[in-house]
Image 1 (tube, helix red, strand yellow):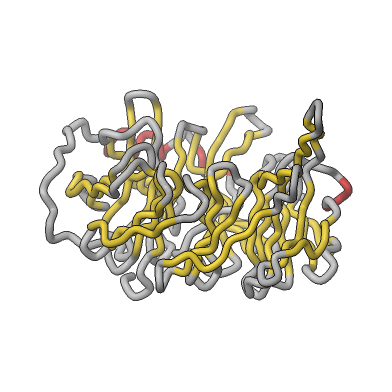
Image 2 (cartoon, rainbow, N blue to C red):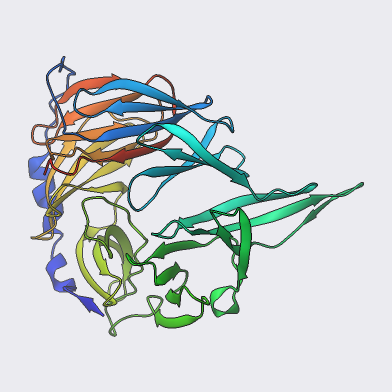
Length: 376
């Protein structure tokens, strides 16, 4: 079910006119900001070395490093209770578990076995109780004269006993090269995102429901296919993301915001206007506002989005990077630009002025920001 989708609201692309009026060509200059604080959160950044760097949000300074046992960091996956991080290495063949309170490695495992190498491909989801993980990947076997390549599989892996519990059949019998899963808050369901949203119960992983997002909810409204978002400022069981769709009446690409309630299988969607090079959607504390990045070569902008009114309220040019990530501070007062370098650039979320640059101690590879829980 799609609610709140009114294609007539697009009109003459009023949001573009409003955005143009709000554009400012004034240059942004960095200023010393020793006393600023975004809240009580913590940043964890992987680097091109065997360690994770820890940055305190309150002081915006590097406070610790966590040695890793498997070399260069690949991907960081946070447990539901925010007490551990599952770290893949750069080969995506090894996983290490970091306890965030002690900042120490407490476990590690691999699915490699002798001359058989298993590589994780896209999917790595830990159930809320952390008893097992759903891992998508494929293996290759080194023989005397060749490599034998195997198809991608979904594995249920026991995190306590370090053993494969089961191989999960592909939903609908359709094998894919990659898969993305998301668990319900209680872990009783797993949502598999493919051409449709397929719901599996987690006892035997059989299909119990299917949300046909590959079809129009109503004739003439176009196909809206949201991707799983992830935000600590969102309610459990919901996700909000920037999506693109084709207006079937005028055959033009549009973009908008979709908020999905997985349990009720409902989606609120509204258009913002014609599709533009806008990415890196990030919600602010409270869930009423969000930001995104306009990214064209040589031209970068912050976009502010009012999620209650469903419109872009501000567009602000700034000096960006060739690759950027975006996060919003725990108290909502600052915007963090990260990735592609060794710094986090801190911008005021009202004036969009660069107020501080934080050196994280090495070029970033993997980034996690855990906001403070009492800062909103």
